[in-house]
Image (cartoon, rainbow, N blue to C red):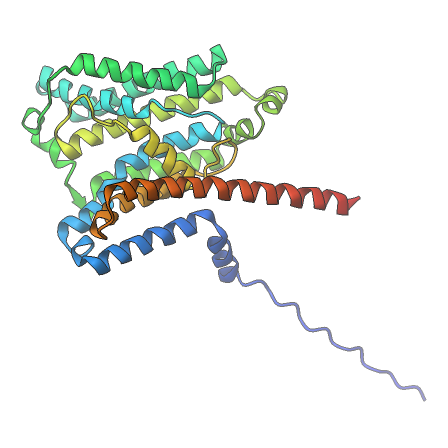
Length: 349
């Protein structure tokens, strides 16, 4: 009589926890570490001075201050991803802000929406000049935009002279845009977030956005593959200029005072925000989300360090250290990824 031995039951494979997987991806994301840094800076400044967060002005400025740099950094990130750079965005912002004020002065009664559209188109045209010089003349973007940065600023100084546009020169409903809130969140911040979401969607889901990454990763290979490199580079610069022009409008609404130095130095702040946010300076890597969070970190640090009693020199040194650290981290991650790819290829043989 034979006996049958029951086959050992194999333990059921545990299904992956979707929540745990999502949390793991979030914790590994570069943007998560920057958000954590922003929170730490806010906590440290609030412990030192509770009004940094728990006062009406402090809470409002916490949201409002990064909004304009966020727009400029998003445009800068798209240009950087195509392995270019736009150093003229600060000058474009200044010109657009002054144009906004002049339109209200020279054309009384002009609709606010028309002014916004004109400033965005104006910024886009200046971006088109940069993009055309880079794409058709085949001159490095660093050289082209360094030249246009000074040229646009010179035009701004020539146009503005010793003049200055004050809040009394612009309509109240326009200036109210700079302080209005919806559900305790400034309108300018909501506008910047909507633009950020739109550009992020375009970069992730649209073919043109994905081609920007391919072009930045290897421009020669992208051209051989038949990608419209010139068209995508032009699009990136036009987008960067248009967002800088839009930021100029918001600048005029936020501060109400515009002179020839409006937006001076913003080009480096925008590059710094994008690099800190994980956008590779050599193109092909990064996201506009990271650039926007990097802008929030930079502006929060600029507000927090004086509260913490850090001298002005060290404020700039901290920002510089963040940029250098981000570049070193990118380099280390790139080398590690390259090594893994080589190991995987050798293992697969």
